[in-house]
Amino acid sequence: METVLDCIPCFQVQALRAARAAGASEQTQTQVLREVMRTVLEADWGDTPVDLGMPVHQMVREITGVDDPFADDKRQATEAALSHLPELRRRIAEAHDPLRMAVRIAIAGNIIDLGALEHFDLNATLERVSVIDFAIDHCEALHASLEDADSVLLFADNAGEIVFDRLLLETIAERWDPRITLVVKSGPFINDATAEDVRASGLDAIDRLAVREVSNGDDGATPIYASEEIDRWIAEHDLTIAKGQANYEALSERKDVFFLLMAKCPCVAKSIGVDVGDIILRHGRR
Image 1 (cartoon, one colour):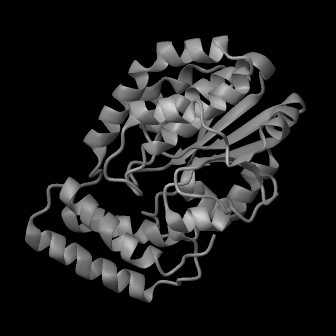
Image 2 (cartoon, helix red, strand yellow; image 1 turned 180 degrees about the horizontal axis):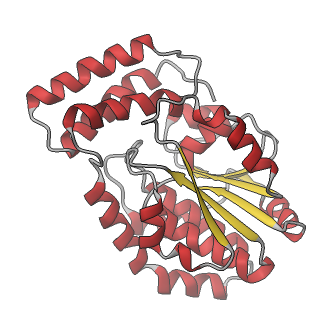
């Protein structure tokens, strides 16, 4: 998905929110916004939103001197998500179609997105997503692909959210037992999941699960999802799942990826052809 004009002011909003989360003074917040405007002005607007967003948040970290502005939010989100595990495991176990229920729960976790939302209601979202219809529903294709998959690659999105991804991966592991690779950020980027969040969420307890890291932008290597390394990771696995809006933005042109997300941004919703608030399980560009 290419950057659209509406993304440009959104970068400013994200940067200001991150600077305030870092406890920056008003003077420092002003400096952040000025530098972000300069960075975005000089960027290639033909890149994906996530690739433009990387240097924006790198700038916030550098100017504020706070490596992880959303550290407390991530920790609280993980704790809140873990408190739901017993009940959600029961729902999956009792469901007529455990995989579909696990997918719903994983998508509900996508509400924990501080890049798109400043506030959200996790409990209400879990209840709503458990019963509403999918705007795009390729669950049968996912089920069929899992039958033939010896390996699964999942691009994770946010801290807290990955607790719900854990339930999906546990469901897949119990039924099909593939080798699983989880991709997270190499360091802090908004509230995206890192290897530290993987451990806090208990995903490292899943058998045959490995973790790989994709750049958070600090090394200046952009666009990160267009690299040969990412191509190789996808080629090395029988099935690829991309969680959330940012991974959709980065990988949307691929035909060989299952996208699981809730549309929270009007631009992403328009790109997919759905409404804001819809839930999506889409196989590639089908």
